Image 1 (cartoon, helix red, strand yellow):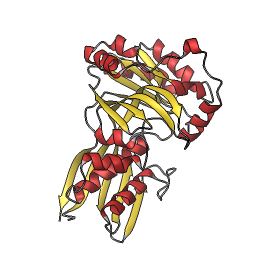
Image 2 (tube, rainbow, N blue to C red):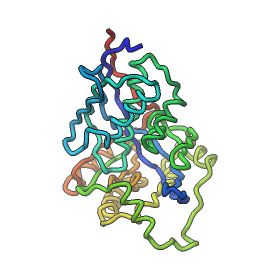
Image 3 (cartoon, rainbow, N blue to C red):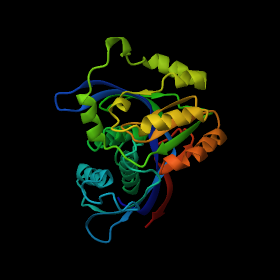
Image 4 (spheres, rainbow, N blue to C red):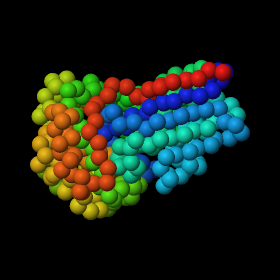
Length: 303
């Protein structure tokens, strides 16, 4: 074991094309039904055999903790404990995505660490085993491990692969304020129930798959929704959605628990043009495209 000394992984982030909260478990976890898609927005995860025992974590964002509070740190710990190996790794994360945006940046980091360590140690765990391990770290980690597109249900443990989006561009923008996931769900729980006439049942898997296969961006846009938008603590999301629609988007919504908002466009050029007009209202933005796979190995160095 441990023939590889250094490895670099590109870990893609995700959007929630749709997100419906379908229930609440007794343990406090929310049940969801969400169509998720990974996009060409990457965090870079570099792993190397540590010079000393333990887990050392470095991150390009100084505001992100680098101890056991970090999902990447916990992913490494879970991997070593699952294989009953002595912890000895140095992790360096270069963020391409902002935090508190609903883009799954922390989950992407964890997925990158699991894929990278598994390769470093000659792949002792299957993808199914990695996903089981990932779920103990975060609800979105199994999806980030597999990549592509999927209907995600339960708390994130039930994944049904979907055809990935094709021939479109996705604008991502984040306002100055960020939304913390636990607080967004607490706010959602305090909201009054929606009138029965406004409550729609989750769209069936078959319908979603057929719509995505059709390739019609206008039909795909009809799937776009996010229940958690009602819990937004300010008007940043509503303002950005309005401006994205005005910029020519087929559809727009908050992704995950926010605060980032995405817009579906027919071309990257149109998405970039819209982004230029939003510069005064956001502190981060990118025009990306859907991608088919999860974490990608850039290089590895053998002993």
